[in-house]
Length: 173
Image 1 (tube, rainbow, N blue to C red):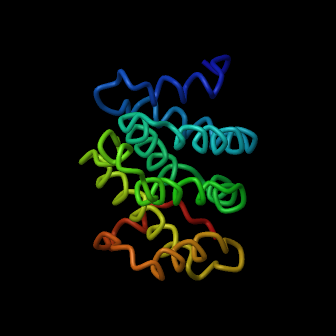
Image 2 (spheres, rainbow, N blue to C red):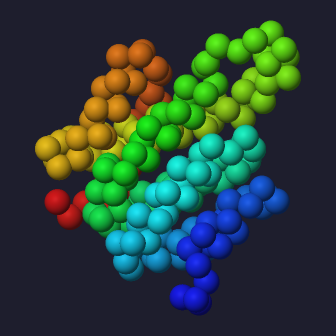
């Protein structure tokens, strides 16, 4: 199984033909990323590429995979998320929909799709979860608080907090 490349696992987990997330595969990817730091680095690069997709279902599957990794990977994963510009890619998802579009773009725009709202809510919830979890470790994880504060300043509506959720991140700090 280790001979299967990480990118192949990512491609299978985010394939637009999947009707729903394959949580077993997502956990396999999280385990792989936990096993070696280089897999964390590779994985974050794949996430950044996948968030540029124009297919909303692919983006939703990528969010499922990211959420699985957030809740099942150790501190190395979060350190790389913090330091390797994954958060700007996530924030770009929020901005992509809000950018100024021409009339023609608005008429044919996939950004009007009702499926964007759940993606936005998940992006905001994840950023809020990271900020809540790493608030006391801001010196070590400055990106989480920086992006959270920036989005708050922009008056974006964050979803209600789930007080139990911040304990779902493996925090050994």
